[in-house]
Length: 237
Length: 232
Image (cartoon, rainbow over all chains, first blue to last red; front, top):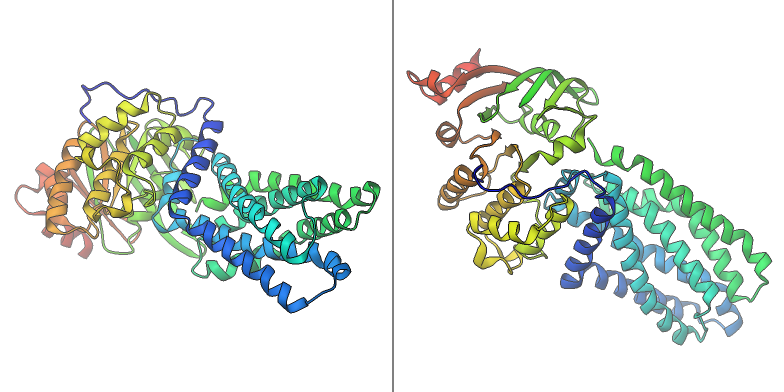
């Protein structure tokens, strides 16, 4: 640009954190709603899993209730891995991750932006999977407590998954590496979520569900705090 | 504008840069040349704050890296052989996204101005994945100058372009990106580097092996200077 032309008004270092987070989320949602690559892969995969479980288990109503939380979280975890891999691969393949890292914003804004968009994709898939599951397994999953657990579990999963996918995407074996890294780390979140979901489905008193629910909240906070602290080091060479 | 002193970069046991000293004055256009594996991209990534130096001192636009990385990034534009653009967003949406990331206010007018400068005004609503490689690279230059940076880094910007696209990029690079800015460009295209740059530095085996200003090459050409520097 010719230096005689007026310079664009730029305020790169002033209170840009929230703006940067929302810019990353807007960009991810806009691109995904146009291509639907990530979303359709996650959705089809989730529906196939619950169908396969439905045919494979051939369970009576009582047993169905007891395995529901396990089947649901296995579905969400596997489908979530697909989404996380794809979401970060989009950034890596055309060098866009460098474009993000070159922006004069706190890099944790990029992390939180990616977490929110990954979480949104997971929640959209879950909103579609839950009624299908309810019909196939004849179980009412629309209980406020259970929905809260699904939200909390998804937050923890997206939080730690986004960090690990930022690590694994830099390797040649990223598709294989992410689940290998993620599943051992995310076990506390999945276990707490399965236990709390099972509690709500079995109609246990709140006092009995409180313990896994508190653990789930604690793990969410710990994982997101750790990811917030180390993300900069993970993405910088 | 850019000062680098005794820069060392190691990846594990491998040392890529072995004490690089480098200085660029405001308004200079420096072509950084060297064979594959010499460390040119690593060096540029350190200047861009994408990579952390193992040892040494790096100052860009008066700010020290890595401690003042955000301040450096606000004054820096980068164009690499990858477009750093999202294929599923339109040209305008890509620029709008980066404008928001750079905290640019009144970005709509600036986006129109930049699209006009790189000759893509009439393709502003088209998805970037439908663009040719040359058009993507022009838009990448638009992205890099969106916030009007003082320093521009080019990392092999001509990679993958045919002759026509390279010639068009030359024009955009001269009139849009380099004009009035401090530029460091890595390239294997000696003819283009000779045409564009005001100074030539040869990076070989992790150090600057030779440096010459354009006017100092009058009695020889860049190719012979380059060969002599690598042979030394």
